[in-house]
Length: 72
Image 1: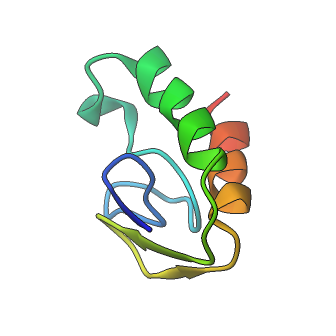
Image 2: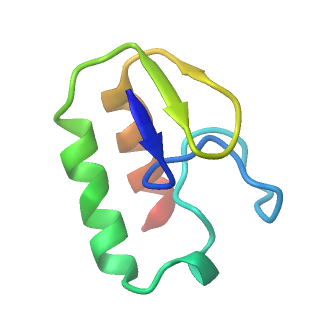
């Protein structure tokens, strides 16, 4: 799955490694960004191609849920 900036696996401005949202300065509506992770978690796939960070191998659902945990 290609997630673009909706779900990334790293960013130069973030100290977090792995699935995450972009840092808050990139969101106009953070609650909607967090809610979009629920949509991504409903998708099936084993390879995530994010807009930033390395390729994530493993269930896209798990990556989205992990990013949601970190976002709260």
